Length: 300
Image (tube, rainbow, N blue to C red; front, side, top):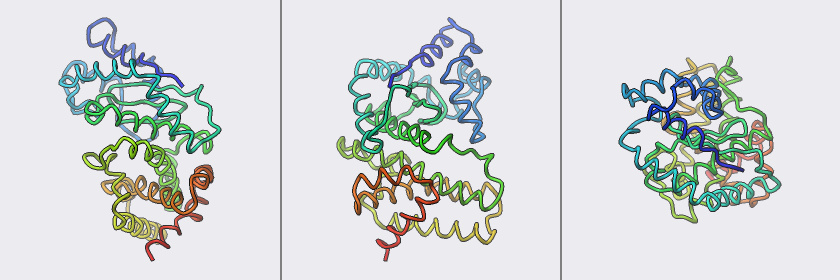
């Protein structure tokens, strides 16, 4: 596992006039972000970067307050470099809990500016250092890196992540939903031990609040009801658009993320970490059939 700072370096060269904006499109991290954006129809492009760099807009995904944060970002990058061996060790230890036989030599972490808080795809992790919780607490960056590295490992067992272009029926919506419950649950559970050890907050932002259900069982049961309702509506063709589906499955309640985490946490409580390891590598459909009942039993 290594850290590649080339995207950040190129970005700041462009800001200082030492490089052209078009040069960054050849950077590996730019290509990785573009591939992720294409899968989810997110608006990421060279033109968007140009608007930020020319100070025409910061209201672009992941760039809010960039110029205000510029000094803090440079400090964070310096800290990442200074403590690199230590925090990479934390990431690897957390991932080995779930993937005990894993090899890290082909995984690269790219600190970037803009786009999502973090993505893990194609043997790469991109972490947006223009993120307030990272600038306030370096350990939040480590937590997200653990989460996204778990996604990279998930791909090794399940193949490339699914994109929106794979949704073409109510049945495919159900498959997509179950896949992302499995996928996101893996990422959130991967960082749980690190977050507890370092007493990270369970409030403030959605990714921090994913961990609220550790102390709020009512939240878990509400998510279970939301899932059952959505699956029933899909079964009876009552979901009227892909937008409704995405809002209910991936919107404010973060159903996929939090229900997935709840299932993995329940598996760990009932059967232990070795069963969690087995559950991760199951196909998502089998995972849901086998383990969702644990939450049903707890609810009863």
